[in-house]
Length: 323
Length: 140
Image (tube, rainbow over all chains, first blue to last red; front, side, top):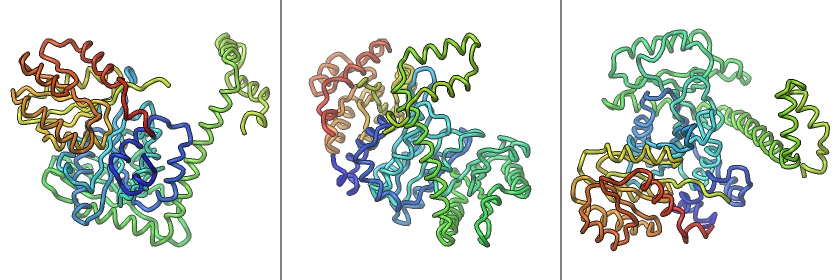
């Protein structure tokens, strides 16, 4: 398997490489390094929301619309790993059967493998591989998300938060968390009773002020997340949703907000990788016995946990171990 | 390096609508630490091959209760071979008479599980099949 096969869009090569990426998150891979320069040309759309709001069906419907416009689409669908067995049932493909038999669509399921932000640690790298493979649009579907699974905003150019009728009231809507990261809000299952009430709750939340106000750049008008009502059952609202997504992407391009967004996303990613790498390298230099001794002293309430960390770090010669 | 538990595709080809067995197996494999792609009912051989390719699974498990296994199983094998997935093994579960079982095994299917098969046995067997000497793992 070569980098060239992936750049050429060879699906078997892509699929196999994605497995490698998924299984070795810490090590630098020569292939990833070579693919990185080619990974900046796709639109990345994040779809998130509570379990059962219809994310997978919405992804399928959106993908069909994008295919009508002759855009190639890759989908990364994340489902949770069982905390007990480490196994997972990845069932998003069940709702995506209409997309089968189309060479312009690539679907990949993945499990969170212990990560808590709504994505897996390696989702970012997988998206990058698919971008380098040349897919025009990459849709990332998070696990059924609650109030703190907001990692998707670190990856997506446009984040769509999906709600459905009957899930919460006005107080849920003004809490911090997942609604705050929305570039577009969707009330899906519009065919069910209560959709009006859900839409009203979201509207009043937006009227109370949207957090992106703190992210204003110069005179650029603030993007106010539109609320779109959709029903994948009755096939309504989907054109409007796609229009709004395109509108958001144009907004981001037109005003060069994309640069600001990428800067923010890459800063977060860099910091995270620095954290993980530093920790790993440091831990490699410390004897197991030393760790056991520290934990023992903490357990006996001899030393405060933060004090123990400071003490350990004072004993490390950074210049030797962090090259 | 320690090998990860296998990644398995559980699929139901053909027209029968009984997916309880497939779901029970998917759940049992999950509880054994595997990542299981479950694709739902009425999959064509081409759909199964496509899922196996995109998900890069280690093993494909077919659940068939309609009696048409002697048509469907070879069709899935053929569709997978056509996508250059000769190296991905297939196991079959369902109501399979002894004679057919022998024919399937002779035809390159790695294992056949009948109604009496214990889940422990199935799990063990799938581990063994997935972690056998695999030419695919050698390349990079």
